[in-house]
Image 1: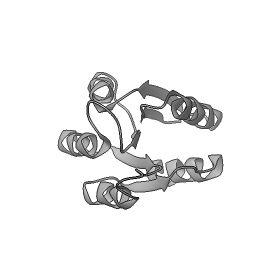
Image 2 (image 1 turned 180 degrees about the horizontal axis):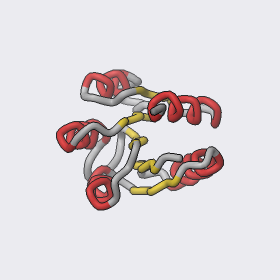
Image 3 (image 1 turned 180 degrees about the vertical axis):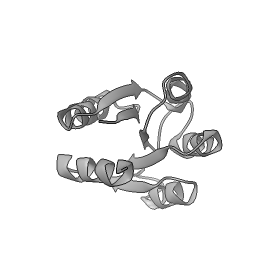
Image 4 (image 1 turned 90 degrees about the horizontal axis):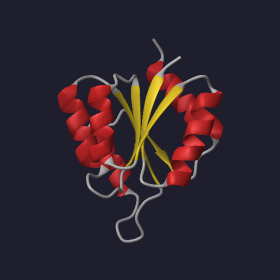
Length: 121
């Protein structure tokens, strides 16, 4: 199947995404923020990146921009929003190059469907 890099500062979210994605037959790499994620991105070619918008060190928007500069990798942005900023940032993620977005919480089926759509050969 596909190799997917999950970048999220929430360990629980990363664990759930790993469970869902490995259950669908994918290989998963994990990073806690955009800086660590980009190190893995350059060291291990991936078919897709799933990343949160709000993270320490390097946020999702900056990370999407760097992924776009580096090449053509599919990007799925995820977020539950920010109490002070609202959900608009997921739409900004699309403007900056995310291929699709999912609002947390989402179901296993929604995630697996989105990954399938974006990584279809």
